[in-house]
Image (cartoon, rainbow, N blue to C red; front, side, top):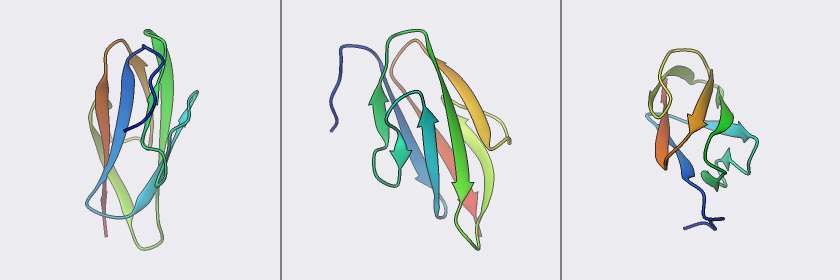
Length: 86
């Protein structure tokens, strides 16, 4: 689901626990809106925040690494997954 503007779509998923992901620029506020369409070449900064009792492990997919903040340049549609654990 979601609306597109003709540009690539960046989607985010939460795996293995509870938390939230906010993306800027764009309308990602995962927990609610987990994808956004942006112009090709747009750099989107995703911030993963674990809920109480959980911790952020790493990113997989369009984002990689163990830092909670990830910047991905969106040249094609893709999915970034935030992995959380208790």
